[in-house]
Length: 404
Ligand SMILES: *Cc1c(COP(=O)(O)O)cnc(C)c1O
Image (cartoon, rainbow, N blue to C red; front, side, top):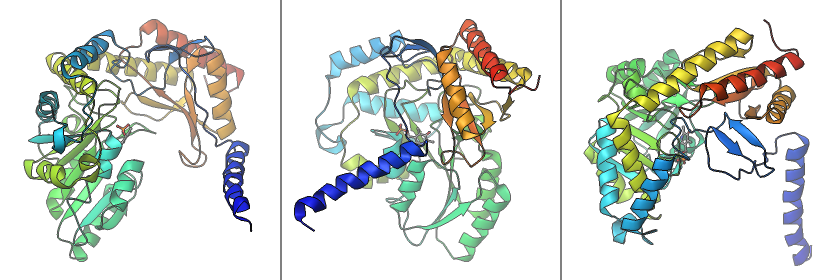
């Protein structure tokens, strides 16, 4: 084969694979938003939509106070660092944010990353090796799965949220003579809004001498009485060894991640964690604005309370209407449609009625479990939720889905 033909076949193969994704309905298009993120957004076609699919749980993403915080931090610390942390990329604002996150989460120390994806990618390899075992929930986030792949520890997978199977895996890791055992789970699973049973996980960890790690991306800032997270929700603050999380969801919505825990863990990560050592410092605007968010959340639970009130209101109304939802209390509300084309059609009809939701289907969720996933925000007004609910009702009636 001529060399230029060899090159050309590479691009042809990609084009064919992309065409295949489109044919199977698996191609993910991107909606283009022309406004700030918020309870309502304006798309590039000028359409105004009530947004029910952002991780903007506390409504801070497009919030005016956040913009002012980011501008103020930029004025003081500049636009960026042009450095990794250990060379010349650490400013007082980074240290203050790490301190504030530790205080908020109830831990000793915290290390910042450019994203939670990096936090999870860089947490396992420096701490564990082939003498150790990682015991991981089957539905853990992709970044946890990738992080575990980069580590030499033996892998044990337990069936999703199944405490009996977790115990079996702990027994197997023990029988294999592993030095350290680390149980890892999402604090909240984003597709179903399922809250990990941390009370039971901590009990099992105690019984088998295991450590516990949770990924709090869908929990930090609003789960638990004062929004500290799933560990507060389940009354196990102080019993979790490692917490990873994002600054890109409830805590402001820009980007950035962190790992929090005992001093020895965080110090080790600062010395050895590759996404920390070999990637740029978090922008000062994000560090400063995140610091202000933690101050705001520590002084009042108003946003968290409003989010949970909106969640309870929406969950009750949508069930009452006759839709099937996954039961629970989390602001992720999966409205089950079961059929993939139906989920797509439903999301499209809602779009035409001024409501932005996303249809999810296999392979993102199990076969036959297609759904539209609603995510509530503290920023939604009752009027907006009522409008969205009316659009759900109309669409449900039109497609013959309502039991009531
Ligand atoms: C969103 C998410 C991440 C990635 O967070 P980023 O900060 O956007 O990289 C990691 N884990 C879970 C469970 C998430 O939901």
